[in-house]
Length: 262
Length: 306
Image (cartoon, rainbow over the protein chains, first blue to last red):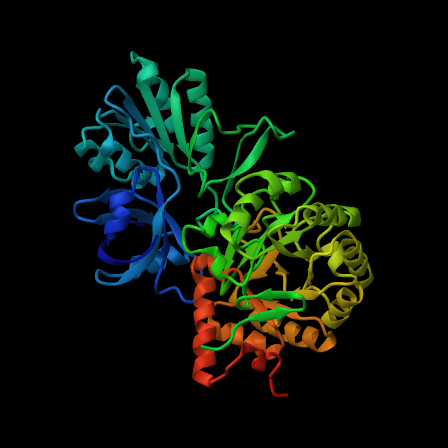
């Protein structure tokens, strides 16, 4: 499950966002939308932990594994310095996946920031081309918009500063996306910051539409051993009504009905 | 290849490489990577009389050459541990040598868990008493930083079980020898050390501590020289075997602990970087012994030249 993977391309997209493509045939063959990989960033010597990244795309034919990342700290800064031909050890695919919509199901994908990256593979594999609701702080943070359009998805945008699309939160776009549709035949898949996902989850419960949310926390081992990346889910057997679930193992994708919102 | 058979009092292990409690889950998490029965012993995450949530998140932060954690002993509790298929029933089937780490808030809690495990001890090789977790408010470190208090916990557990006992010592003390002696005097068959070192990291953008518990336990290569020194001091103070741990990433790191006086070692944080780390450490120990022409690991235990 731990593979030495050569970098084929590592290129900047815009505003600190990068796309890296690895030669990873075993991972690409097994990957499903919503899963992640745990990467040992080779040049990091005095930082020993791996870095988790959502799988953005995986092609079983070419064996290519694509990850979209933002330079935010030591690990991603080092990753951005790596070049084609160099390699990293990659553990994966890890975690569970979004349900792949069947031919009857209309997919509504809801992303915050570069949450789009984790939704791309699900969009690609969906028989019906649906809607991507994309929220970001400003237009600079809108990532992969053209990629989703090329798949045939309609893209509706909300920005906090109103620089593009609706001024406000991405959750405010959901009622419009559901309008006139048979909710029983819609599936909402969400990925983004936790507050956005909790708001989205509550809204989908009110709207009575199925939703799956990709939740996580600072991760360490990536395989369920260390209990670092836990998120709260409902548990009627617990006196508190919730328990901590390991997002790397039991998640990262949770049904909105499972999530504890208290 | 050198003889790696490891005798820890009345406990015999096939090799000296164990996993540090809290870094290997309950064994099952790593079973898909390698047969966990290859290890000297699997030390499972701490078990209390009750199920517990642990601390709020974020629970970990990376630092230079190490990490901080404040998981807070999230765990299934003794009932679920003994009966749920993911825990002890799985471990029995795995063929692994199993050591169960135990903790509580009161002395009676430790004795209760020990008695429960003693009553269903099939497949359990030993118990490890956790009197050194820095991340829970009650129990844990409160017992581990006073030799007399720690001795009472050890004596209570000793009275509750016939299983071999390991007492896991805290590095957060001035004189580690006193704690090793207290464990020995109260019936512990071994001591293990070190647990993590209380530490802190702050996000300079937000001014907030990097983990929700404010402080956490430092582990990884950053703590290794502290651990080697404490293993050296503890092993010279007692006759019972010492299990050394703290930042072991390679076979060479492990050798340093043997030379300091450890009879066995545990791999911890390294597992988070590489799930196969314990096996790589074992290979590295073998390679070093072969290179040096050492026939048996026993020959180098405590062999540091002073």
